[in-house]
Image (cartoon, rainbow, N blue to C red):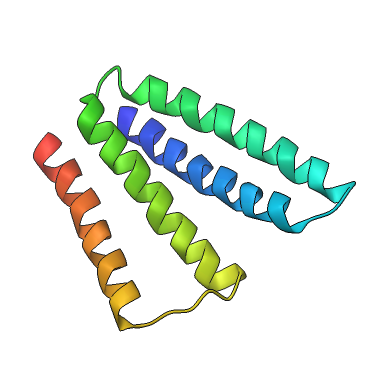
Length: 108
């Protein structure tokens, strides 16, 4: 269950980063809805991370949390915001995924 909480926390980290991007590019009144989404996603993300660190070492939990957030945010940028992709960008995202999986494996 703590690993599920950590994954949910990472997914909501992607949500608050995405909302923050939309806040920057929106105008009133739409900006307020994106900001509300940012606040809600941030609160859920931090709460789920808080729940996870009760059972997972903090260094591991935070590393996995930020890894999920970074990977997810890059993928959202590529698929929804037409951010560029190239070999090196995909290579380093792959190494990040391998690192997150590695942290999970050595923490078991």
